[in-house]
Image 1 (cartoon, helix red, strand yellow):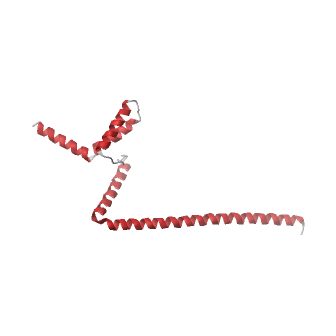
Image 2 (cartoon, helix red, strand yellow):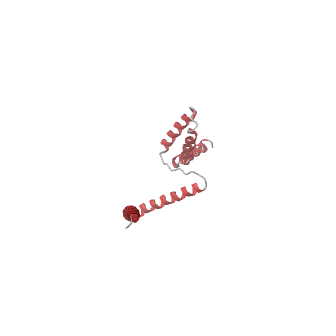
Image 3 (cartoon, one colour):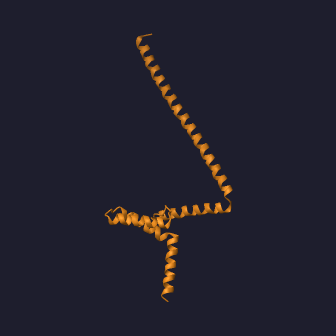
Length: 147
C-alpha cells in the first residue's frame, strides 16, 4: 500500500479511537447520573415513607396541626400574591418589643436601613395575639374607668 494510504488509515484510526474515548466518557457520566438519580429516588421514597409513618402516628391532634400548618402556608401564599409580605419569623412578644427598641435606637442613631426593621417589628407586634389581647384589656379598663 502507498504511504499516503497508511497515513490516512492511521489518521482515521486515531479519530475513531478519540471518538470511542469520548463515547466511553459520555457513557461513564451517564451511568454516574443514573446512579445519582436512583440514589435520589431511594431517598425521596424513604422520606415519603417517613412522612406517612409520622402522619399515621400523629393522631387527631397531630393531623389538626398539619392542617393548620398547611392553612398558614396557603394564607402566606395568598398574602404574597397580593403584594403583602407575610410574617415568617415568630418570636415571643417580649423579644419582638426588644427587637423593635433596638431597631428604633439604630434608626435614631442615623442608620436609615433600620427603618425597614422598625416597620417589620412594629407590624409583627401589632399582629401578635398577646399584644392584641393586651390592647383589648386596656380598652376595656379605660371604658370601665371612664364610665
